[in-house]
Amino acid sequence: MTTIAPDETALEAVFDATVAADERIEPRDWMPDAYRASLVRQIAQHAHSEIIGMQPEANWITRAPSLRRKAILMAKVQDEAGHGLYLYSAAETLGAGRDELLDMLHSGRQKYSSIFNYPTLTWADAGAIGWLVDGAAITNQVPLCRCSYGPYARAMVRVCKEESFHQRQGYELLLTLSRGTEAQRAMAQDAVDRWWWPSLMMFGPPDDESAHSAQSMAWKIKRHSNDELRQRFVDICVPQAEALGLTLPDPDLAWNDERGHWDFGPIDWAEFREVLKGNGPCNEERISRRRQAHEDGAWVREAAAAHAAKQGEATR
Amino acid sequence: MNVTVTPALALGDDALILSHRLGEWIGHAPVLEEEVALANIALDLLGQARVLLSIAGDEDELAYLREERQFRNLQLVEQPNGDFAHTIARQLYFSTCQELLYEHLAAGGSELAPLAAKAVKEVAYHRDHAEQWTLRLGDGTEESHRRMQHGLDALWRFTGELFEPVDGLDVPWSALHDTWTTRIGSLLRRATLTVPEGPKSGAWTAGAGRQGLHTEPFGRMLAEMQHLHRSHPGATW
Ligand SMILES: [Fe+2]
Ligand SMILES: [Fe+2]
Image (tube, rainbow over all chains, first blue to last red; front, side, top):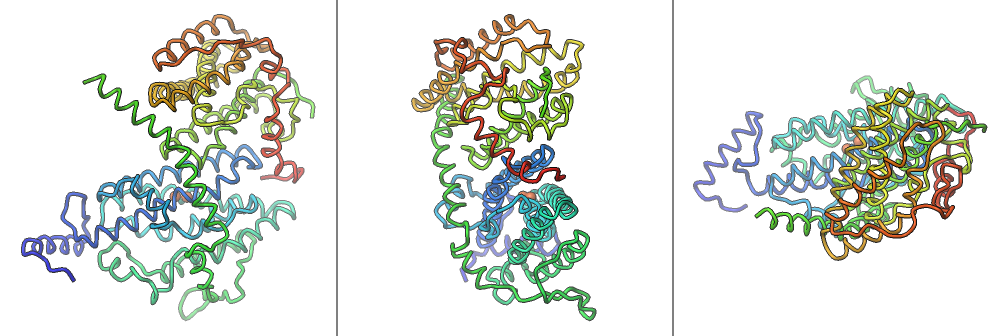
């Protein structure tokens, strides 16, 4: 615990009252250092996930099997870049610049969502990502629209609208495959088999192991626990899978009348920890490609800065 | 597949192929804003391609089931991306021409007029985007200047084909070519760059896309673009 100067006690009381009243903290308001740091960490990780998340899907843009699907996929990946932009801007309001955060990503000091360390092996993976990964992201992010930090909450409102498009488009892609030829159907089932468990891991470790949860809940950055959100997601997906005519790869899935929820089998947390540590199938590729794009672009960014400086001198 | 060559097909192929090349950038752009901008241009062009190819026939059959020699796009648009300056040079040459062409078509009474009228606004943005980057890179650092000049020089020989008459299109090609040359020249001067020298046309390698002769990288590009669709004959996506 740090000791708080008397004038900070008053400021902290205002902060606490604002949070308690469910009002928003804005960039110019006083906030505890730990609150700021926690937000920067979360928003940066979220922003990094948006831009790393472009890679697995961009993998299929050049092979999309119809022009309509190609347009949808390109627009989706473009949206993810846009989400990255909003989120880096939100982090900037807390004093964390984009360059600094990208450095943290490239040097491995900040993380991105582990889900993107899994490969997209077939076209159906583009559908499974939309349905399950965007679906899980929405479940996580809808409550963030009421997050206590104003700029983050407002960014989430825009992001969630687009994510729900992505989720529907992914679902519709899988539905088309599921109703298609035998090979298309098998492709869809295979993708769901591979993406289901990693999607459940997107909600993070179980509540009793979650490092940051309790404080984030107290600050109203977070509104529901990891396990609550995971359960909500499972309950949404089970009937959707049935409507798709696809099965979820969990023999323990069963409706529990007493709880009013679907029971599901144990998650392989050892796999989760390994992927988080860097040992997933694509960790190395994703971060290398990101670094490569950044390095390859260095001369372009330098040129833009040099040109802007010359223009500035010319108008002075 | 039997294909009737029409203006809609030729212009549709230009948009389709350039859109594909720009799509290859997604995830690799030098800065996040350019991920959005390049995808935006790619999406506009894909939208144009879909309208044009649907005038010419079935968009997916035309995109996915034709052989290389049946494509009628300019050789310029199929050229690999190269570095960012190369991509900008390709876009500058193409969009400056496409804007002039579509302005002309929009004012006419052909079946392409409605599409051209809508697309010309998009194309003006593409051209402006390419111009802004040409200025930044040309008058930026020594390295960016060298790369930009290199991109312009390397692609210059593909620009003669931009103004070769397309059967069935009533367009004052040489007047458009003059305007294009003036515009490109004054932009490059502002960007402290040099207008490339050397032939723009004549050598068959740099001007036969409209007749279905393409360059080596094109076949590879089509193989990637078409393989999934062709692996599942008759499937719906
Ligand atoms: Fe997103
Ligand atoms: Fe998304």
